[in-house]
Amino acid sequence: MTVRIDAGTYVAPTLPSDASEARLRGTEEAAKVDGPSFADTLQGVVESASASHAQATQKAEAVAQGTLDDLHGTMISVKEAEISLKLVGSIRNKLLDAFHEIWRTNV
Image (cartoon, rainbow, N blue to C red; front, side, top):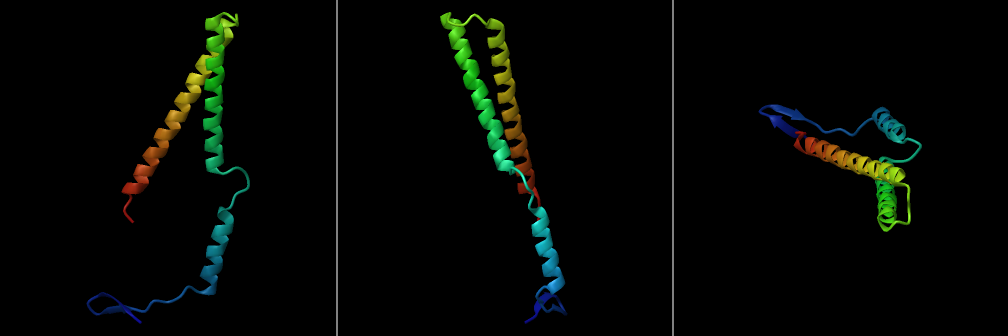
């Protein structure tokens, strides 16, 4: 079987040789990395931000009810939660930008 590329040029498709198959297998093996995956890391960041937000909310409610006198610690917790939520939002925006860039790439 031949494939016509343009007028007068024909190319016969061939199967990859054993060397190129081994090279491909080596690439797959090299791509495997020990440790947490990107999804696990991202999930950990989101869960940490959520926990920080929940803790800040509890402290703020306790200060508002008068059961907690640590206003300084509460404000620090609120700011930490705010920063972590901004970080998660920034990560989301960067991921969307990267996705759109890949989507626009011509193959």
